[in-house]
Image (cartoon, rainbow, N blue to C red; front, side, top):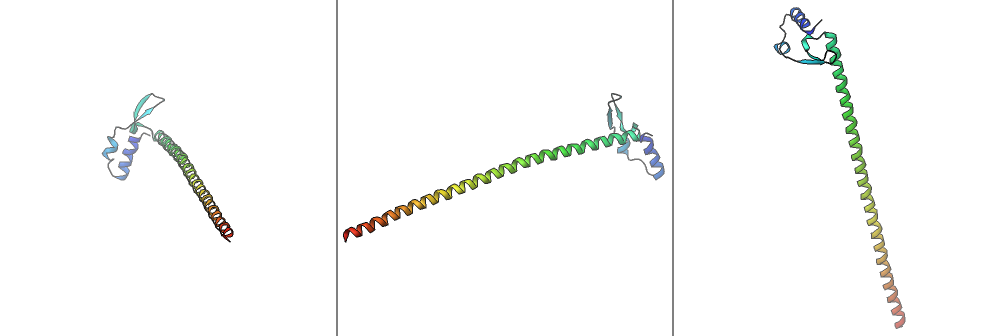
Length: 125
């Protein structure tokens, strides 16, 4: 049974008019098998349900594909963040090593100076 007849039956049973935007919408569906556009209200209910289910399936598939794309982008961003953290940690370690080297050098200089002073005192005695 076609949708326009089903809407007429529904309006009789419920005692309400079919909304005008439904009757005069002018929506069409392209039929590949007929190679033409068909008004939605001229479709059989079963055919309309199949069309609707196909659109729902395609819509859900697009959502899954978008989600997968977003997930891949987030993974790349996380990798980039991890690389930046590693780079910062390496820079921190390098700074610490350089500071330790500088401290050792300073202590060596101080030790040399202390030894020099001690040797000078011995020579004076």
